[in-house]
Amino acid sequence: SAFAGRRLVVFSGGAAKGTEDVYNELRALRDGGASGSIIGRNSFQREKADALELLDTAIRIYQGKA
Image 1 (cartoon, helix red, strand yellow):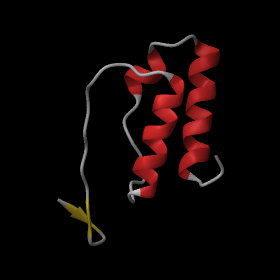
Image 2: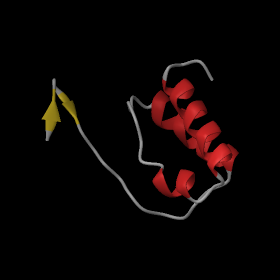
Image 3: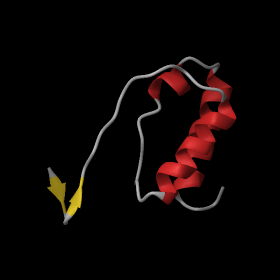
Image 4: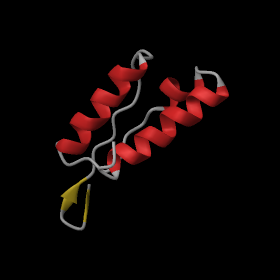
């Protein structure tokens, strides 16, 4: 499918990753033109404070601030 002339692709699944691995993947996705990603397993399998920090950093990565 496409939205506003851009193809939408959704990938899901895979093993949980370390924090820096998640951040590096998010940066690569952002740099490749992605506007978001699915990181449920990588956030929900952490303690709440760590998960909130991970999600905050993920948002800042997509905003180009991290």
